[in-house]
Length: 259
Image (cartoon, rainbow, N blue to C red; front, side, top):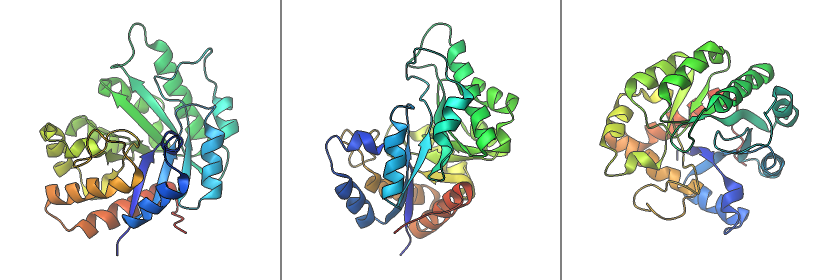
């Protein structure tokens, strides 16, 4: 039986209503063997790292979401001091979000560059969040030499041209439950064109539950429904999607612990 990896979730937000034991049990029952728990701020990162230390099927990523408010500018050292741990396999999520933020967003671009610099210093891949900012995302990734570490374009919703540019810089394209939505036809066309060897699947739990759970609380177990939908889109066996996306994750983040 093939297993799956949920390449992006937020377990601390799920733990507010569900025990970690149930989250992991439900995941195992749906063939999910591993998950990457992603930080949205530095304050919550120690909890995520501890989850990874306590549960082999969890890995951690450390960073500050582009919409998280900070009293002062983030530094490379602040990120590196927390992320320099073998349970931390990536830096992020980081990036640009022009949908939720307004005005002069130089601070957001500066924070993004800081994350890229930290990723290069630690030699860890990046988890990229982008919304309504595809041109600036690609431009900054190129300017900062992000291809030296690569990473993941998390919850991808942009066009195939953007996907190709990211792939050329050693980034994987990760599809969430959004791809299963009825109104996501353009994104589904993109998913058909992205080669499976450059693809990941994710939940972004507790957000963006896939069909048939849309509108409900998402959980890592539901990444199976994303993978099944991708298999239907590409007209290939589910096992092929499961095996290749898991291999892609393993190659990007070095290893998968599933015990």
